[in-house]
Amino acid sequence: EKGTYQHYMLKEIEEQPLVIRKVIQQYQEENGQLVIDPSIVEALNEADRLYIVAAGTSYHAGLIGKQFIETMAKIPTEVHLASEFGYNMPLLSEKPLFIFISQSGETADSRAVLVQVKKLGYKALTLTNVPGSTLSREADYTLLLHAGPEIAVASTKAYTAQLAVLAILAEVTAKGRNVDAEIDIAHELAIVANAMEELCDGKDEFEQIARDYLTVSRNSFFIGRSLDYAVCLEAALKLKEISYIQAEGFAGGELKHGPIALIEDGTPVFALATQENVNLNLRGNVKEVAARGANTCIISMKGLEMNGDRFVLPEVHEILTPLISVLPMQYISYYAALHRGCDVDKPRNLAKSVTVE
Ligand code: F6R
Image (cartoon, rainbow, N blue to C red; front, side, top):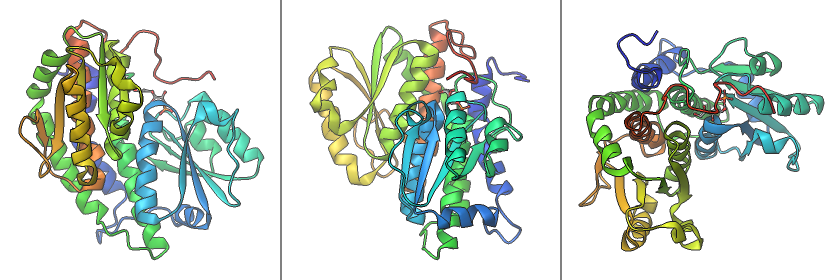
């Protein structure tokens, strides 16, 4: 039940610190070591390439999961949209392993791919929030998200739970192949949970940002580089699906190759700056759009902030920033939709699980 919350979406946004703590607890042994079913770790280690297949928000989690797995476990990983994969299958490696990411475990596009790869004799792992769901039953292995039921159509806590489980999977797999993951994921996720709590406590600021930037806009842009780019795709999806404001996520460096033509006087542009190696270049992109009249809102990470940034995120391990940088975006979408009188939990034209191809 949503209790005192006005909407399930708000409740689910604010459950995220608890969800992350629950995920750590579910995958941690008494001695503090993270554990995953050894047969899953073996399946990853036997594969020469991983193929992540998903849709929507879960696809966006996959884009970040690829970075976790490649950085920590050093296994080449591709990420595919389920709805494209089935009709346009890439040339597969010799020993592929498929990873399906799906909150509901019922997405028809993903299911169609799973049926296809099983026919080819390949193994599959499903990350899902719903035990006993179709994608879980039909795959060889399952990892649960432990996010609790997600009722709002717009996915929030399932996304951050997916990221947490993917980070744990990456670290445990690295250990299994004697690669130094160089990061203590359980410890860093605990810091993430605290940072999330801090963001939830300060949500009034995100309501104000929604008022300042999105009250009258018909369109909006989210820009970032590297991991921030993947979060921008998710931010734009969130905003468009519940507020009906056209929203697009762009890689900072791609603006000059076309999208910058869309910038007009007052166009809201949200910029995420959490990655040190691309911070200065991203700042350059912000200047380019500001010079063309954009109303820019920079959200940066502590340590990388500069004068004029609208919000500075609490510091977490650099690779885990997507788990917290998405929170302001979820809140901004929520408040923008609320201010516009939209049906936040049940946006028009959308269903919670998409069971047709
Ligand atoms: C976005 C959203 C959808 C789902 C997508 C996949 O907020 O809810 O984009 O993420 O339909 O759903 P699952 O994860 O259930 O396969």
